[in-house]
Amino acid sequence: MWWTDDWGAWGWLLMSLTMLAFWVLVAGVAVVLVRSVTAGRDGGRVSGQDHDDPERILDLRLARGEIDEQEHARTRAALRGRQTLGDRPPAGAPR
Image (spheres, rainbow, N blue to C red):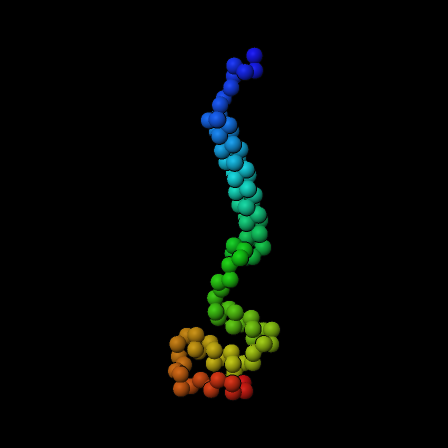
């Protein structure tokens, strides 16, 4: 009786593609769930994005003590377009 219900090559191809589609769907759902869970921890940003507001980064650098207040003011002015090239200290000059 088993030999009368042969699907042939097309049946096996259909089963293989269906199984592949199933596992791709499972993996996609897992990725979406992980991203939605981790996005809440990053303040709404999707993990992996390095894009941030330059002035916010500058403020964080000042708060961590990486730069002093003069460098902070000079860089903020440059970011806002108020500083010309002649106002900048030469490269390698002490800060």
